[in-house]
Length: 293
Ligand code: SF4
Image: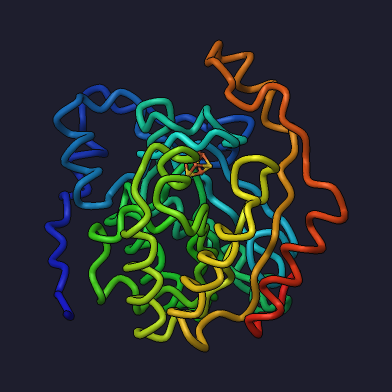
């Protein structure tokens, strides 16, 4: 069902004239963004709802990682899931991110747009779960499309209902995490439910968005033959929209962050998949007719 999203734009002066407004150039993962530090809670919530600001963990420029070509990947703060293998638990809480102006983000894309076009790249929103901030992300995507820049959303699809069909039409490519095909395993891996991912994948496929499916292979958790068959069955429901499937072997690169944050890490002793296991899973997807990386 097509829905029209109406944005009630926050008046820019509300942010700029806020008595607590400060300009600063954020360093590290947010270098180069002017951030509206000091907005009171009510102003922030209002601006978040309209998309005038977004809460961002970090950003970087990369090549052939989060979509085709050279891309600006923006890691948004906030995630409703708690995946056992999460590499970025520091993105879970939206309030831990830094507020960034919509206009600053669009200016940044404008600065890099010729590079994006020359390399077949563009902008990718990742996280955390960027679908927690649908107004900001979709307004950036709208602006990117107006500049002729390719757009990519890296998501679990868990917040399917946060996105209208109008918003989806501005997403060229979705990196869709299908974390499990089996409902019970999905719950165990993420703490959430599987159905919204399936619904989101079917909806974006029907609206013309291309899909690269991502499946994280964790021995003893997601690797059963039956589970992989169910993931393949879900991908089949997305039809020709699926360009390929990435089978990503679990690794322990995220472990230090769990330790630093003093969160009990459920995969403390888990190992990555053997070459033999990975080969079996790749073949399962190939037997369903998919291109697998
Ligand atoms: S969806 Fe991504 S960011 Fe959220 S918990 Fe899972 S792996 Fe981490």
